[in-house]
Length: 342
Image 1 (cartoon, rainbow, N blue to C red):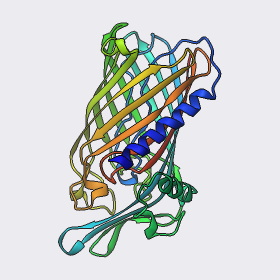
Image 2 (image 1 turned 45 degrees about the horizontal axis):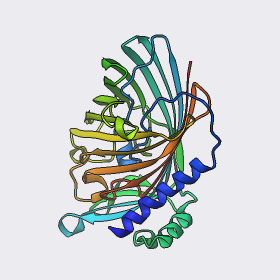
Image 3 (image 1 turned 90 degrees about the horizontal axis):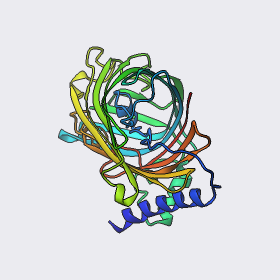
Image 4 (image 1 turned 30 degrees about the vertical axis):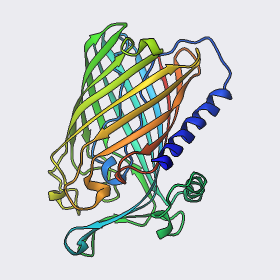
């Protein structure tokens, strides 16, 4: 517990350094969650949406966002009778995404997200191992393989059903979504969103699920609940219907669950007219029903960082993510989002 607290306090310290190094300006702020997500390569392909604000933009407004996510994966597990099943996650995954949304009416918006996925040996292993050593954290998983290698493999009875050791990149699964306002007021905003991901990414190379995945969720932003602490809160709750029709090529279709639940909660503190500090928790139920922990367990992701308002209409999010429960989430995630509206 002490080691875990040291890790999270160190992340908050980094956020503080970011704040102290930034000049102040007189700009308006709008609290939004980080667009962080679980980048375990076997879970990231399944259409789990990031957290969203509950606010729908004014009619006719366009919003663009450019996202960059980095995850350093290091996990190994085996299980089942005579350890018949095993998984190796060793490498870095980068996710670039372009998101466009438009408010077609005062209470309705549509959008599209197109990601580009890169699986690589990476460059951060030595840095993360040094970071763990500095704060007395374990490197037991990382010591089992050379630094900066790529090895994503799921095996059953000694045979690799899905995985690779070669760097690769390409387009991920295209997502279309539409949101309808339920409540829109200065104190509280709630919207409902339906989202459909199409199998445009290559499932063999873990750039897509090989199936269409559908999600439905509620997102809320509240300016009153924690107002006495000068905090804006936001939350999300939804259900993911995991596609099964394509059987994910080599991965046995019986491993996938049909349904997963997900949700999250976070707070935003207006540090200055130009800077917001944020922290959020996101969780989801197990996506698979096999033996190995990096696939079959619930997950909780903690993300901390801040938003820098570059102008009235342009914002930059910088955040660091950390797994809180199991190895179903990478133990080091970076999220950077540049967004603009007009």
